[in-house]
Every structure is written in C-alpha cells, then in structure tokens.
Image (tube, rainbow, N blue to C red; front, top):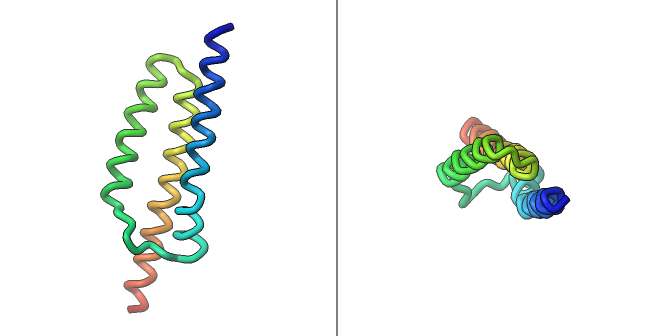
Amino acid sequence: MAAMWIEAIGLIAGVIGIFAWIPQIIEVWVHKRHEGLSLTSFSVVSIALLLWLIYGILVESIAMIVANIMTLSVIGAIILGAWRARKSESATG
C-alpha cells in the first residue's frame, strides 16, 4: 500500500513538471520564437532524462517511467519546433 502512495507522489510530480515546459512549447510552436534556446542544452537534458527512464525501468517505477516519457516527449517537441523555426528562418533569410 505504501508503495502505491509513493508512486502516486512521483506521478503527480511528473505531471506538474510537464506544465513547466508549456510556455516554452507555446513560444516555439505558436509564436515561432527560438532565440536564446540552446538545442545543445536541451539535448543534454534529453540524455539525462533517457538515463532516468532506463533507471525507472530497471527499478520498476511506473512514476519514473511515465514522467520521463512525458518529459522526453515535451522536450522533443520543443527541439523539433525550434529546429523547424530555424530551418524556416534560414530558408527565407
């Protein structure tokens, strides 16, 4: 029973963490703004999250697995959006 509460806390933390990325997604996808966005930093964060995902799988933590998959998806969307905006900008500039 205690393990279920621990996983629930982890899932809630993961979902709350996703909300932190929403403003960045809006900037990149809606407003097409990517200035000051470091794709290198986002790539390094993605590698760290991938390692946390592997760790979560190894320790069989649903919260870690779900949270890291969701966060990797969001960061992937930001990287893709920034890449598209930069590509579009360089094609027209």
